[in-house]
Length: 252
Image 1 (tube, rainbow, N blue to C red):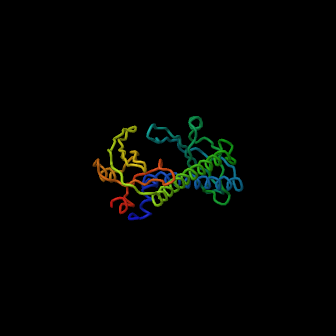
Image 2: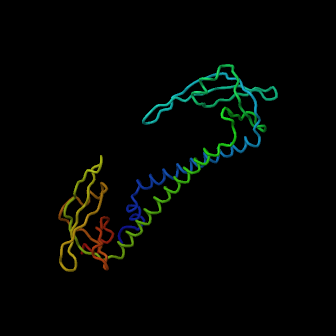
Image 3: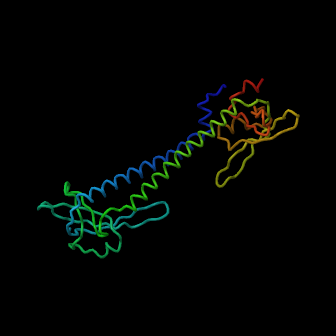
C-alpha cells in the first residue's frame, strides 16, 4: 500500500480531534484523581494528628470567580492562632452564612497538625473525614479515565477494521459523482458521493465524510476516477479509497 499504515490509522482515528478529546478526559481524570488522593492524605493526617484549638479572626474578604456562564462570590476568612507561644496564620473559604456570622477578633474553631502546626483547617462543620467528598472525586476521576480510554480504544478498533478492509477488499474503479455540502449544526461539512458498477453491471453509490480540507480539495472535481474497496463476500459493503492507499491497482 502506497500510504503508510500508521498515517492511515491516524486519519481513520480522527487525527488531532480524537487525540485532543481523549487526552482531555485522561488529563482530567488524572488531575481529579491526584486531587482526591491529596485530599484523602490530608484527611487521614488530620484524623491521626489533628489538635483542636481556637483561632482569632483577623480579616474577612471576598473574591470573584468567573466562568463562561456566571460569576460567583467566594467568601474568605483569615485567622491567627498560637501553638506553644508561636503565632501562625491561616486562611480558608467558608459558606456565606458562616462568613456573615463571624466577627473580626472573634473566635474560630480550627485544628492543626501536631507534627506541623503551620498546617491547619477550620472545624466549623465538625471536621473529621469527609468520605463523601473524596469518594465523589475518585468517582469522577474513574469516569473520566474510563471515557478517555474508551474513546481511544474504540477509535483504534474502528481504524484497525477499516485498515483491514482496505487491505483485503477487492478494488474497483469508481467515479466521483459530487461533493455534497451539508449544514450540520453550526458547521458546514462536505461529503463525497461516489459511484461504481458491481459484478452485474448495476450502478452502486456510496458516500464518505465529512471530508477534511485536504480531502475536499483533492476530490472536489466531479467525474474524476476514484478507487472503491468492495467486500468480496458482501458487495453491499464498500468504501472509497480516499487516501489512495491502493491507487496503483485502481488507477491502471
